[in-house]
Image: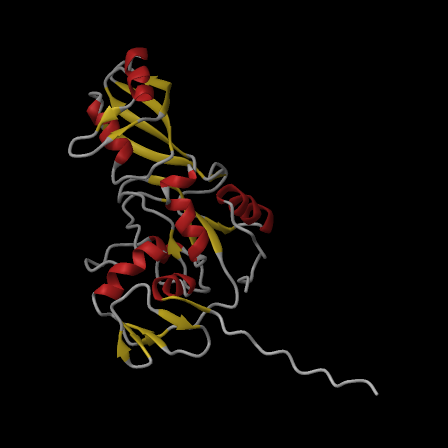
Length: 261
Protein backbone atom coordinates (compact mmCIF):
# COMPACT_ATOMS: atom_id res chain seq x y z
CA UNK A 1 0.00 0.00 0.00
CA UNK A 2 1.29 3.40 -0.99
CA UNK A 3 1.88 5.68 1.95
CA UNK A 4 0.01 8.95 1.98
CA UNK A 5 2.29 11.92 1.63
CA UNK A 6 2.04 14.50 4.36
CA UNK A 7 1.31 18.00 3.15
CA UNK A 8 4.40 20.19 3.18
CA UNK A 9 4.47 22.72 5.95
CA UNK A 10 4.67 26.30 4.84
CA UNK A 11 7.76 27.86 6.35
CA UNK A 12 7.12 31.36 7.68
CA UNK A 13 9.54 34.04 6.54
CA UNK A 14 10.79 36.26 9.34
CA UNK A 15 13.00 39.32 9.00
CA UNK A 16 14.18 42.33 10.92
CA UNK A 17 11.73 45.22 11.12
CA UNK A 18 13.91 47.70 9.21
CA UNK A 19 14.41 45.12 6.45
CA UNK A 20 10.64 44.52 6.33
CA UNK A 21 10.01 48.27 5.87
CA UNK A 22 12.53 48.23 3.02
CA UNK A 23 10.84 45.12 1.61
CA UNK A 24 7.54 47.03 1.58
CA UNK A 25 9.05 50.03 -0.20
CA UNK A 26 9.03 52.51 2.68
CA UNK A 27 12.76 53.28 2.53
CA UNK A 28 16.11 51.55 2.37
CA UNK A 29 17.07 49.42 5.36
CA UNK A 30 19.28 52.22 6.64
CA UNK A 31 16.62 54.84 5.94
CA UNK A 32 13.99 52.81 7.83
CA UNK A 33 15.95 52.95 11.09
CA UNK A 34 15.05 56.57 11.90
CA UNK A 35 11.23 56.28 11.68
CA UNK A 36 11.34 53.03 13.69
CA UNK A 37 13.36 54.66 16.47
CA UNK A 38 10.99 57.65 16.33
CA UNK A 39 8.07 55.36 17.23
CA UNK A 40 6.28 55.58 13.89
CA UNK A 41 5.94 51.80 13.47
CA UNK A 42 3.55 49.42 15.24
CA UNK A 43 3.66 45.63 15.18
CA UNK A 44 0.40 43.95 16.17
CA UNK A 45 -0.74 47.20 17.76
CA UNK A 46 2.41 47.78 19.81
CA UNK A 47 4.93 50.55 19.10
CA UNK A 48 8.31 48.97 18.28
CA UNK A 49 11.42 51.16 18.39
CA UNK A 50 14.01 48.45 17.75
CA UNK A 51 15.05 48.11 14.06
CA UNK A 52 16.22 44.52 14.67
CA UNK A 53 12.86 43.35 16.02
CA UNK A 54 11.80 40.19 14.12
CA UNK A 55 8.46 40.15 12.29
CA UNK A 56 6.83 37.21 10.53
CA UNK A 57 5.81 38.07 6.97
CA UNK A 58 2.12 37.43 6.33
CA UNK A 59 1.32 36.88 10.01
CA UNK A 60 2.31 40.00 11.94
CA UNK A 61 0.42 43.22 11.26
CA UNK A 62 2.89 46.04 10.68
CA UNK A 63 1.68 49.65 10.48
CA UNK A 64 3.74 52.66 9.43
CA UNK A 65 2.17 55.99 10.38
CA UNK A 66 -1.14 54.16 10.76
CA UNK A 67 -1.01 52.49 7.34
CA UNK A 68 -0.83 48.70 7.13
CA UNK A 69 2.22 47.57 5.20
CA UNK A 70 1.86 44.67 2.81
CA UNK A 71 4.87 42.89 1.36
CA UNK A 72 4.97 43.39 -2.41
CA UNK A 73 4.31 40.48 -4.73
CA UNK A 74 6.63 42.02 -7.27
CA UNK A 75 9.65 44.26 -7.17
CA UNK A 76 9.86 47.34 -9.33
CA UNK A 77 12.96 49.05 -10.74
CA UNK A 78 12.65 52.49 -12.38
CA UNK A 79 15.40 54.66 -13.85
CA UNK A 80 14.64 58.41 -13.81
CA UNK A 81 16.42 61.24 -15.59
CA UNK A 82 16.02 63.65 -12.70
CA UNK A 83 15.42 67.30 -13.62
CA UNK A 84 16.68 70.25 -11.59
CA UNK A 85 14.52 71.84 -8.87
CA UNK A 86 13.24 68.42 -7.77
CA UNK A 87 13.57 66.87 -4.32
CA UNK A 88 15.00 63.35 -4.00
CA UNK A 89 12.53 62.32 -1.32
CA UNK A 90 9.18 60.59 -0.90
CA UNK A 91 7.39 63.84 0.04
CA UNK A 92 8.28 67.39 0.96
CA UNK A 93 6.87 69.49 3.80
CA UNK A 94 7.31 72.64 1.68
CA UNK A 95 5.26 71.14 -1.15
CA UNK A 96 8.12 71.18 -3.65
CA UNK A 97 8.12 68.74 -6.56
CA UNK A 98 9.67 65.37 -5.71
CA UNK A 99 11.05 62.54 -7.84
CA UNK A 100 8.00 60.45 -6.83
CA UNK A 101 5.78 62.97 -8.65
CA UNK A 102 7.56 62.02 -11.91
CA UNK A 103 7.12 58.24 -11.64
CA UNK A 104 4.17 56.47 -13.35
CA UNK A 105 1.63 54.88 -10.96
CA UNK A 106 2.50 51.45 -9.59
CA UNK A 107 3.89 49.74 -6.48
CA UNK A 108 5.45 52.20 -4.03
CA UNK A 109 9.18 52.71 -4.66
CA UNK A 110 11.92 54.87 -3.13
CA UNK A 111 15.12 56.48 -4.45
CA UNK A 112 18.46 54.70 -4.10
CA UNK A 113 20.70 57.36 -2.59
CA UNK A 114 20.18 61.05 -3.26
CA UNK A 115 20.76 63.75 -5.84
CA UNK A 116 20.77 67.38 -4.71
CA UNK A 117 17.82 69.65 -5.48
CA UNK A 118 19.53 71.19 -8.52
CA UNK A 119 21.57 68.15 -9.60
CA UNK A 120 20.23 66.32 -12.65
CA UNK A 121 20.65 62.88 -14.17
CA UNK A 122 20.50 59.17 -13.41
CA UNK A 123 18.51 58.14 -10.35
CA UNK A 124 17.30 54.61 -9.62
CA UNK A 125 14.10 53.98 -7.65
CA UNK A 126 12.97 50.57 -6.38
CA UNK A 127 11.17 48.71 -3.61
CA UNK A 128 13.90 46.04 -3.51
CA UNK A 129 15.48 46.91 -0.18
CA UNK A 130 18.39 44.44 -0.30
CA UNK A 131 19.54 45.64 -3.71
CA UNK A 132 19.08 49.32 -2.78
CA UNK A 133 21.15 48.87 0.38
CA UNK A 134 24.08 47.32 -1.46
CA UNK A 135 24.02 49.78 -4.36
CA UNK A 136 24.22 52.68 -1.92
CA UNK A 137 26.92 51.16 0.34
CA UNK A 138 30.57 52.19 -0.31
CA UNK A 139 31.69 48.61 0.37
CA UNK A 140 30.35 47.47 -3.01
CA UNK A 141 32.29 50.08 -5.03
CA UNK A 142 29.39 50.99 -7.35
CA UNK A 143 30.48 53.45 -10.06
CA UNK A 144 28.89 56.89 -10.19
CA UNK A 145 29.99 59.26 -12.96
CA UNK A 146 29.24 62.99 -12.83
CA UNK A 147 29.81 65.85 -15.27
CA UNK A 148 30.11 69.35 -13.87
CA UNK A 149 30.57 72.85 -15.20
CA UNK A 150 32.96 74.51 -12.76
CA UNK A 151 34.33 78.02 -12.40
CA UNK A 152 37.84 78.65 -13.68
CA UNK A 153 40.29 76.73 -15.84
CA UNK A 154 41.03 73.25 -14.50
CA UNK A 155 44.66 72.24 -14.96
CA UNK A 156 46.22 68.78 -15.21
CA UNK A 157 47.76 69.41 -11.80
CA UNK A 158 44.25 69.79 -10.35
CA UNK A 159 43.09 66.60 -12.08
CA UNK A 160 46.02 64.70 -10.53
CA UNK A 161 45.18 66.18 -7.13
CA UNK A 162 41.63 64.79 -7.41
CA UNK A 163 43.11 61.38 -8.30
CA UNK A 164 45.36 61.43 -5.23
CA UNK A 165 42.53 62.59 -2.98
CA UNK A 166 41.46 65.78 -1.25
CA UNK A 167 40.37 66.49 2.30
CA UNK A 168 36.77 67.63 2.54
CA UNK A 169 36.04 70.45 4.98
CA UNK A 170 34.71 68.73 8.07
CA UNK A 171 35.10 65.32 6.43
CA UNK A 172 37.58 62.62 5.33
CA UNK A 173 39.99 62.42 2.42
CA UNK A 174 38.25 61.26 -0.78
CA UNK A 175 39.37 60.74 -4.36
CA UNK A 176 37.95 60.25 -7.85
CA UNK A 177 38.98 59.52 -11.42
CA UNK A 178 38.68 62.91 -13.13
CA UNK A 179 39.27 64.39 -16.58
CA UNK A 180 38.51 67.61 -18.46
CA UNK A 181 35.86 67.13 -21.14
CA UNK A 182 35.28 70.70 -22.31
CA UNK A 183 36.09 74.40 -21.88
CA UNK A 184 33.91 77.47 -22.24
CA UNK A 185 35.62 80.76 -23.11
CA UNK A 186 38.41 79.95 -20.62
CA UNK A 187 36.15 81.00 -17.74
CA UNK A 188 34.49 77.65 -17.06
CA UNK A 189 35.58 74.03 -17.44
CA UNK A 190 33.54 70.89 -17.88
CA UNK A 191 34.91 68.09 -15.72
CA UNK A 192 33.96 64.41 -15.57
CA UNK A 193 34.57 62.59 -12.30
CA UNK A 194 33.97 58.98 -11.26
CA UNK A 195 33.50 58.09 -7.60
CA UNK A 196 32.41 55.04 -5.62
CA UNK A 197 31.27 56.66 -2.40
CA UNK A 198 28.16 58.79 -2.04
CA UNK A 199 28.85 61.27 0.74
CA UNK A 200 26.60 64.30 1.01
CA UNK A 201 27.47 66.87 -1.69
CA UNK A 202 30.68 64.90 -2.30
CA UNK A 203 31.45 66.00 -5.87
CA UNK A 204 30.63 69.65 -5.13
CA UNK A 205 32.80 69.56 -1.99
CA UNK A 206 35.70 67.90 -3.82
CA UNK A 207 35.73 70.45 -6.63
CA UNK A 208 35.34 73.36 -4.23
CA UNK A 209 38.29 71.99 -2.23
CA UNK A 210 40.53 72.31 -5.32
CA UNK A 211 39.32 75.85 -6.06
CA UNK A 212 36.63 75.19 -8.68
CA UNK A 213 33.08 75.68 -7.34
CA UNK A 214 30.37 73.85 -9.29
CA UNK A 215 27.87 75.77 -11.43
CA UNK A 216 25.94 72.79 -12.82
CA UNK A 217 26.11 69.10 -11.96
CA UNK A 218 24.72 66.04 -13.74
CA UNK A 219 25.07 62.34 -12.90
CA UNK A 220 25.51 60.63 -16.25
CA UNK A 221 25.95 57.08 -14.96
CA UNK A 222 24.89 55.10 -11.89
CA UNK A 223 25.79 51.41 -11.53
CA UNK A 224 26.18 51.07 -15.29
CA UNK A 225 22.82 52.75 -16.01
CA UNK A 226 22.74 55.89 -18.16
CA UNK A 227 20.01 58.35 -19.14
CA UNK A 228 21.73 59.39 -22.37
CA UNK A 229 18.70 58.76 -24.60
CA UNK A 230 16.06 59.85 -22.07
CA UNK A 231 14.42 63.27 -21.87
CA UNK A 232 14.88 65.21 -18.65
CA UNK A 233 12.10 64.15 -16.29
CA UNK A 234 11.53 60.92 -18.24
CA UNK A 235 11.64 57.45 -16.70
CA UNK A 236 11.58 53.79 -17.70
CA UNK A 237 11.37 50.35 -16.10
CA UNK A 238 14.61 48.36 -16.10
CA UNK A 239 14.75 45.18 -18.17
CA UNK A 240 15.28 41.81 -16.42
CA UNK A 241 18.77 41.74 -17.94
CA UNK A 242 19.64 45.10 -16.38
CA UNK A 243 18.36 43.93 -12.99
CA UNK A 244 20.47 40.77 -13.24
CA UNK A 245 23.56 42.90 -13.91
CA UNK A 246 22.84 44.99 -10.81
CA UNK A 247 22.46 41.85 -8.69
CA UNK A 248 25.71 40.41 -10.04
CA UNK A 249 27.45 43.73 -9.41
CA UNK A 250 26.72 43.59 -5.66
CA UNK A 251 26.85 39.81 -5.19
CA UNK A 252 23.15 39.01 -4.76
CA UNK A 253 21.22 36.05 -6.12
CA UNK A 254 18.13 36.89 -8.11
CA UNK A 255 14.74 35.65 -9.13
CA UNK A 256 13.62 38.57 -11.29
CA UNK A 257 10.26 40.02 -10.28
CA UNK A 258 9.69 38.01 -7.10
CA UNK A 259 11.29 37.89 -3.70
CA UNK A 260 13.29 34.77 -3.05
CA UNK A 261 12.26 32.74 -0.02
